[in-house]
Image 1 (cartoon, rainbow, N blue to C red):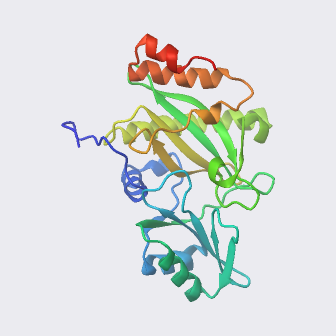
Image 2 (image 1 turned 90 degrees about the vertical axis):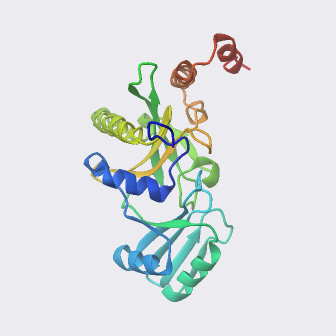
Length: 267
């Protein structure tokens, strides 16, 4: 912690959930119910929701994520990235397998009732940046669509794709309302988080429920794990947004002109 009470490093997923819950972030976005993983918490969450995600508490990029759900033929555990994705059996068997698999600290999280795009999981990465006057800017967004059979929408892990918002939400009025909601949410959450964290950028992963309600799936700030990806925006048809994000970060981070020119030099 620094003298002003802010952390130099990131919060774990469980710490972030507790913090946002205490700050009443649910005024702006739904928070999936989250608990530290244990046999008891897994049993209770599975009984309550019938469908949960397990995530390493300090992991990033979708690594190590799995999903446990009750289905018609028993209980199914799906592990992201495995060739043999589905393991079915009794609830007791699956819980034992899952708990024995994870050695690191994890969370168990309610599976949010999210809409899908062409049958695949997707989320919206909202990129927030601090300006030189300390105000927060809604820098832009991309839609990440998971690969075939994936349980997460993270592009690198699931082999998925990145699209501009217009490709997935084709109705202009829907896009306008969605961007307004995400901007309000993004600014509010960043102002909350800067009470205890030092950061210049945040990548907020947002799921959309049928009907338009927003769910906050994960928070990524520039910290010891690295920062939220700029390269997600590099693949968009219009390069302007990517250039603006990089330039704003360089300006706010106080990069000298020569370093900025060298880093952003076209290949």
